Length: 381
Image 1: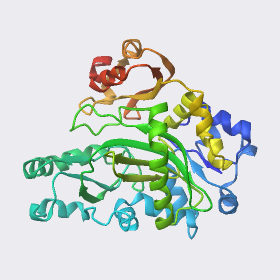
Image 2 (image 1 turned 30 degrees about the vertical axis):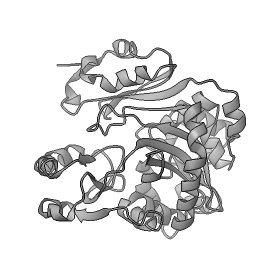
Image 3 (image 1 turned 45 degrees about the vertical axis):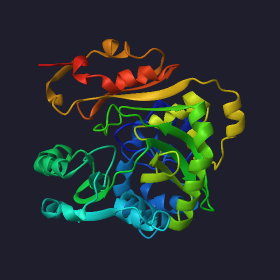
Image 4 (image 1 turned 180 degrees about the vertical axis):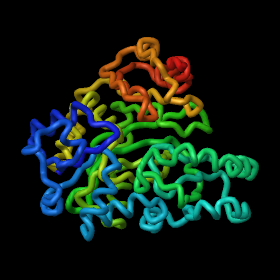
């Protein structure tokens, strides 16, 4: 069963639902795309969830699931994943030396730095994307972060439901070294992981925590599939995940892969996971809901070394969205050599104005996108 929710449902997802006749929960968002007789009534949702796999395009569905599917194994797995401190505790036997500490928002300012290990990351224990994530290199930066914490947190309150981003509890954890990656995958009925795509997440500099761009390629998949599969199988076993789709963020330094967070019930957010179809011809929704596994040996053997990526046109925090009168999409797209699909987003209600899927032969194109000042494409009154 698919649960559709805001902020964004792609045409690709809607078309694949219709083609495969997957069950979809009846709610306000689903009614924008399907007739009432195509939807599963809410009162039958528990019955469907017990006999069918469940996928959602957005973590905004979590509130509904927690309230309506109480007592189910699905709720337990979601709760474990969303609370980063609980997730860290669950996988501690795999990473016994990893430092993390959960604190309340009110406690943060009174924590002695004697108990902290720098460099570190401060972030909401329940979070989404990079909202409220602060990298801290030393005691001086800790003091600077604490001084601006109130104003930064105020900016993100109310953007997402509490079960998606909750700023009452934070986790302090050691900074993981290495390159950052993301994995879209699912645990099957045996708790074994099936990888559907791997992305590399580049940053502009050491201070950057944005989600401006992710990319995938033949070399990324070939090198990292066996390494990340081994890690995910361990996580599935110790945490007890089964029949569960997820989006994992992790870092890999060439020797060890360590999870950053495991996001439940969805793949890459905002339906950006659709890049998997552009890159590999894999219908990621169908693969999970039909429990199919990509034949990676065959897929990669037929591909060249092109880079497939998505990039997000984000609204800078300094801009009042209510004062925006124009986005110069043409000027923005001049930075993208081979766009495969352009999705314009309603920036009045969201923190971004565009999602673009693209193909390139050079990583320099992605580096340029990371350095862009998005204010250059935005006109305000």
